[in-house]
Length: 168
Image 1: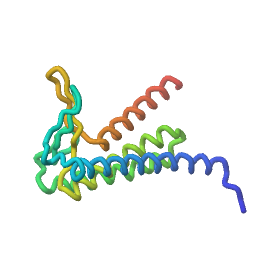
Image 2: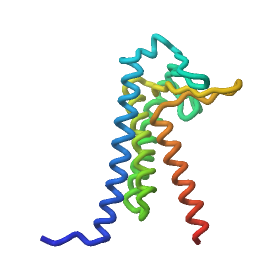
Image 3: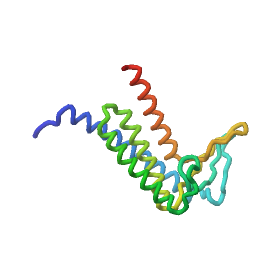
Image 4: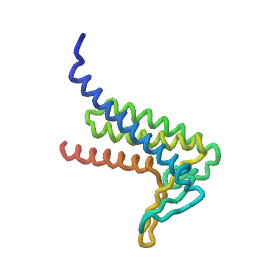
């Protein structure tokens, strides 16, 4: 049998990071939402203070990030889902071509978070959000693990881009 070339092994490794982070984020996101809805029964409790500055608060997000474009009505869930899945495909193409494993992992995390939120939209008509951070009269919009993974993945991409510019 022929040995795969070093280039193919590196590409397979990067794709592996993408798939690993995609699956990890998607599984944790869906498990946490299922537990909040059916195990912890957050819809009945509405909001539970865990510690100063951190609550579990039940929010059905019918819009996109931070409640933007919430007036799209019932067609919004289909429109947002199709756009998100199109972006996931583009990110997958990027992940297959990137030479950096951390970028491949970040893209996998973003893709996993996006698919997790699409599953919610298609299943419930809205995204299940439940993490509420607040302090000193300030309140961050309620979010979920998929949103956090997307934000962290984007942060890695921004940092990678900034570091790459410094090298050039």
